[in-house]
Length: 221
Image (cartoon, rainbow, N blue to C red; front, side):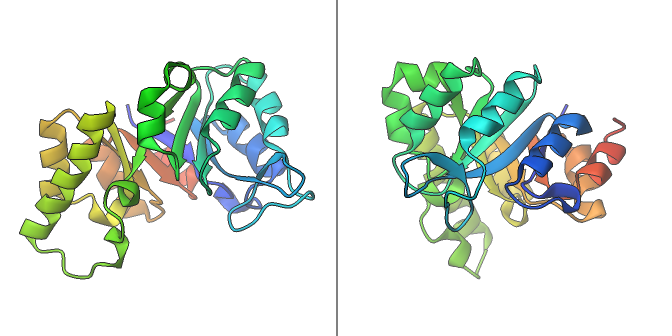
């Protein structure tokens, strides 16, 4: 069954807000996504482009998650070097095994640290494996397959089995090549009803959406 993740701000709630987190926790989704940065005071806080002391702390979000068994959290790291601090905080709140790292998470660091691997999964963002990938406009089949091979090389080297990418690049030849190597696809941010249905029908591993109510309805939940 496809993992349905509530994108930050899903269903019209403010991005990276505790109101959004509470909505996602009560929604029936499998996971929620938040953007994580380090604020000027040294704390880990939610924020896409910046984090200041007025934004919720990651500790506040983790405290809410601790009271919601089974719900997972995708921490989209918006800057480098946050992996260890995020995972340490997750362990403090009893969330080991329920954390997903995406964004600027370092696959080599994750692969080299048993403690990180015991605490969180890492879903490799395609742009971390193939820098500049979203700036391309020519997606011929050879280029698409070359991109798949470059992503697979990082997955093999670091022991990763999930690739996180914009849904527009999850084209059949690309998906089939990764599936042949046992690598699953997590697609974002899928908001069109027809696109949501298409990926659900295809059995994609994970789908992140701002239209959470729609995705849950289409999934029959």
